[in-house]
Amino acid sequence: MKRIVGLAIPVALQSLLMSLLSLSDQLMVGQLGSSAVATTGIGAQLTMLVSVVVTSLATACSAYAAQYHATKRHDQLRGVVALAATAGMMLAAPLFLVGAISPQAVLCPFTQDLGLRTAGAGYIRCLALGMLPTALTIIATAMLRATGRVRIPLNAAVIAIVANLALDWILIFGHYGAPRLGLLGAGIGTLTARLLEFGIVAISLARELDLLGQWTWLPATTVRTITATALPQVGTELLWVLSENTYTAVYGRLGTQSLAAMAMTYPVQAMVFGLFGGLSAAAMPLLGASLGHQHHAQAMADARRLLRLGVGGATVAAVLVAGLAPWYVSLYTVTPETSALAVSVLRIFCLYLAVKVANMIISGGILPAGGDSRFQFLSETLATWTIGVPLALTGAFVLHLPLPVVYAMLSTEEVARFVIGTQRVRSGTWIRITTS
Image 1 (cartoon, rainbow, N blue to C red):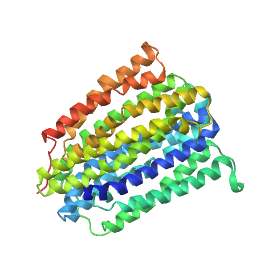
Image 2 (cartoon, one colour):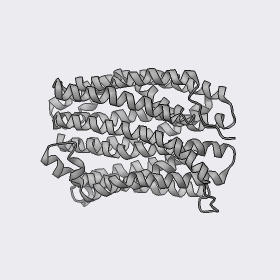
Image 3 (cartoon, helix red, strand yellow):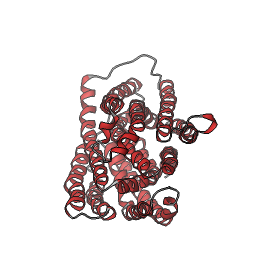
Image 4 (cartoon, rainbow, N blue to C red):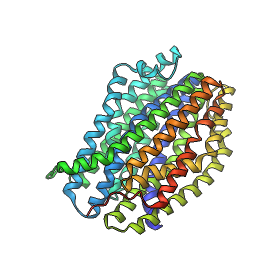
């Protein structure tokens, strides 16, 4: 338990602090009206498109990094870093290029509101320019965590958040003689913070792992093995995040108010998941070390312990969030209709929270640590695209139901994933990779 807490708390704090970055943007932009809030919601989904996919790549690679670090094979560890960084940039490049060149084209699938697309173009361009440093920050952070250096990314996140808060306040509202840039100011502040965080973690990783020293590239067979593990996981998360983007497009077709209401819930969801993300991230070094030394029984026990902690904590968090939802929504300058929609969605989110957190720990930590990425791909993909997406489309476009009901319908996919995932963990068949 002590090792779980030691690994999880710094990661959870970093995730919470990064969620505060998003929350600070959202609350400041929230004073500009529903259209601006809706734009940041779309921006959050675009950022998630890159961050989730690259995180899945980083998680798969860090499973090997953790085992190489545990067995002191430093040359192979450096090779994993190089492989992950190269692949991460390739994954982020398309949105980086399209968003930088034509941000309105990126907005088109999510909204039919021409005014929103025009006003939000500058903000989306700033987010797109930050995609490459964001991807590399995720890779560097995963490698530092896999080798037990969890405090360095936390410190970098704190510095980035302070910079982002200050720049947002100055540029959005025009303080200290700066121009009043509104939504564009939020984009500039976010981009600057991401560049700053990337610089800190990249330099730290290079020093800690001696990346500037002698390099030994991974053998082709090892690259193929890592690729075979990573591809299903990346594919799984890509299909999942595309489903989330599909949901956002559905919300946008329900109207700008519905899109804004969902956007208001994203920072709260991110903060809650950030709180429990430490348990998911702790699974990689914790289980990876046990599997690297062939201690399968210990890995099984730790996996069950992580799930118990997650579900118990999520239940408490759900009660708190549901109670505080009206107060949180009151911080925005939006219409009463938008506020009411946001409160309803947040409370429905709380009903599913314990299941969502358990799924995050299983899919984001336990299964990748054991190299069980193919099962992860099948279970998540089937649940999302055969349950969640069809229900969202049916509720919105066939039954013409309001946003809270549509959100409740699509969230039932989480229950299916929970049943399948917990059975897999109990069976022990998720243990697929070990190094010797």
